[in-house]
Length: 208
Image (cartoon, rainbow, N blue to C red):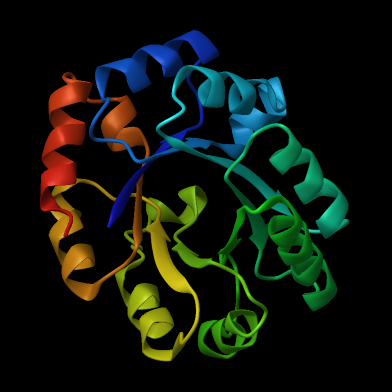
């Protein structure tokens, strides 16, 4: 299991400080969508330059021009980029082509997918690496969490590996770990912790 730190609202320098503090615990540094909007591919390049041992994920949530946009992410140094599960098959297939061309990986974000089981089965046949269940930030306040969705994805995938994101924290990580996922994404719980090094290390210790 890998721990992915979702870096959404910090500045580039703050993110570098966080990654230095949490070295040894963070396996994947996610350049979150708000961060991409703010800074483009600059954080991707900087993270790869300063932390070559950490995988970098560009959370660009591609929904069109799949191969073209994925090329831009991988050329900047991203190891993984994201495409939305609600996209056209052709878009996802384009991202997969790009990933294979560059020797990189694809994560499909299943946010807002209506028929999760059916779409997971379809996406799983496209050659993607990860299928990520994602409880949207805008609905976390209603008490939703990704565990039930993770169970659905895990029940049908045959090729890809699962990932889970959306409000994951120390109090909920054990249930998710017990269900099983290759990547556990934690954002605000690490970024806002009083002792980020200790919190990341403790979360990492719960992963199998």
